[in-house]
Length: 362
Image (tube, rainbow, N blue to C red; front, side, top):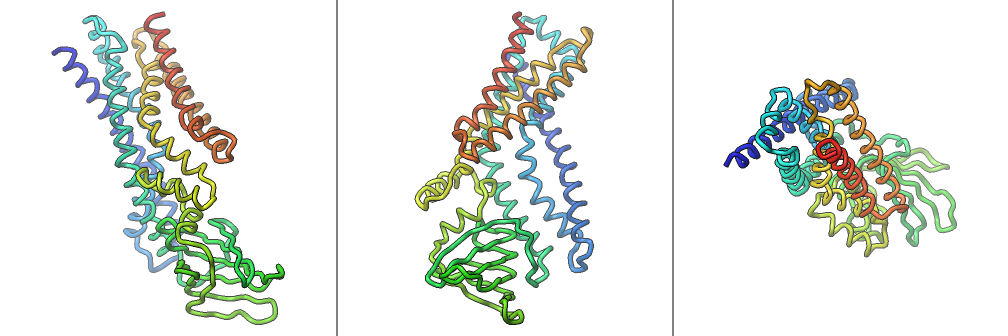
């Protein structure tokens, strides 16, 4: 009974500290994002501050999803340091409870939080990001086409009329609606024909439908049209796979996207990497708890706690760098997505386990 009560107590302290850390970072990120959006929309008189705040609110969950491992690590460090400062860990050790026993509740809690983040939080953040994109379009699109800067999403198509290179500044609904369009058209011989700019575009069977169009040709003035169509052989599935990003696809939809991308002959490395990272997330959070435990269980009267905490922060930063490197290698198809997703988990978990093993058992 004592062990069960203590396990629940340690788990509750860890969960509360992690949620508090998550909430603090949420407030910081949404404040910074709101200020940035207000700065960009300051010249627009028809945009309210409440609408901008709602847009920032919908953008934040995806950022916090990327920061979740650090929230768990900081929460674990805070909870363990608080228990050590109040000598609760000393009493637990005196009662014959080892460090592995009072670390286990935090590990199990991290696994549960990771599973919830993958199965529930990820689909919600993906849906909110799509809504944020639509709201950003309403804020920063004034109804007139504008010259694009070459960023965004690109797709190339060839038909009997020639080749067309299509660029979209933003994608909504995972490619269902494209905004900020620029199209470069060439005739069958490869000679440049015209440039088309449009406010938005949707794909219908056998054709693109552009709205708010301005057409530029070399030998005539610009022509403005409300709607304009361009024939195509692309399917909606191909367009969705080209204009959607792995972060905007929820965990439950990723297998279908991977399969459809394979069938259409498109690259699937990004989708496979995202799928494996979401599966590995519970174990990554558990690895962060092990790293935090390795640097947070030292008694305060022994001194050197500050150095241990700094070393834990440095270890978390190095693990983040490793995950970014493996992500880039996987997206470049130089590393298998399975290895790229699970290598940081193995490195972080084994490092924390060995450090804790050395401290506790010599």
